[in-house]
Length: 96
Image (cartoon, rainbow, N blue to C red; front, side, top):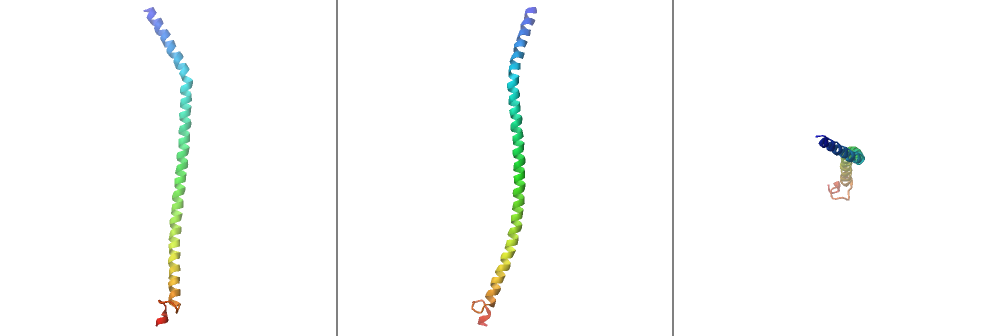
C-alpha cells in the first residue's frame, strides 16, 4: 500500500511538472487569442462605422438625385418654352 501511494505521489509530481512546462505555452496561446479577439472587435467596429458612413452617403446621394431630377425637369421645361417661343422651331407658334 505504501509503495502504491509513493508511486502515485511520484506520478502526480510528474504530471504537475509537465503541466508547469505547458503553463507558459498555454498562457501565450490565450494571450494570442485575446489579441486576435480585440483586433476582431476593432475591425467590426470600423466596419460598422464604415457601413453607417456608407448609408449616410447613400441618403445624401438620394437627396441630390432628387434635386438633380427636379433641376433637370425645370431645365427641360425651359428648353420646351424656348422652342415654343422660337419662330424657327417646328413646335413654335410660327405656323399659326
